[in-house]
Image 1 (cartoon, one colour):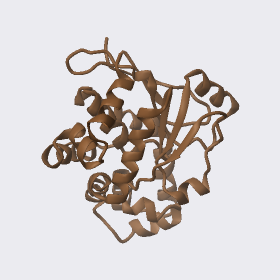
Image 2: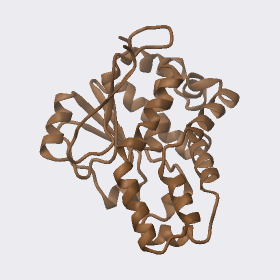
Image 3: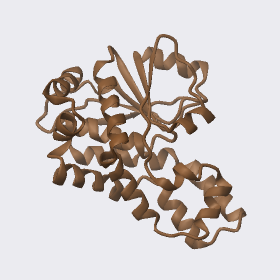
Length: 260
């Protein structure tokens, strides 16, 4: 069996996983264990920190906005380099970060699926976010050991960053989509709690539908990223090489790091 998403059973870190038996589309082995994805590390336990050390994590890349990181700072990991490369997957949850504010917004707006698709694509289009993605790729490529990528829930921004990296490495997109959708399993309990909170606050069915669209990993969102990469940027490798400005040498460093 190839291309396995391996869930990491951390106590205080949600939606964490790495990869085993990872291969390219033509069957070349990759060091999937060098890439770890998760939600924020704000509540990482001492046992979680020890587990990350055992996984040879040498760098953490935080994709959250500065306000998010300030509100829930990561637990410090000894002798691990930390990089902040902020992305904003959608303008709604980035602006309305508390539940009351978000619920109030949802009471008068619709179109969450379109917001999410636009937000995912904007990570590739916005110059500031491109700069963050370039810094992310450099951090991943240059770290001597494994790298952990995370945002808040490990869903949208982490999903796009990991999809970009895995696709550039030559991993089959069917697997990339399957791995991305695993977030819905990891976040099922949290999603149920949000639905209940909205119901308690008097949320309508329409508001519940909008909340679900904001909160789930949806294949349409990631498909929109790949469509943009293919039609405008000559794929993930072209995007990294030309648009992010890493050139052939930067792409080669990324490919070499993960070569099996």
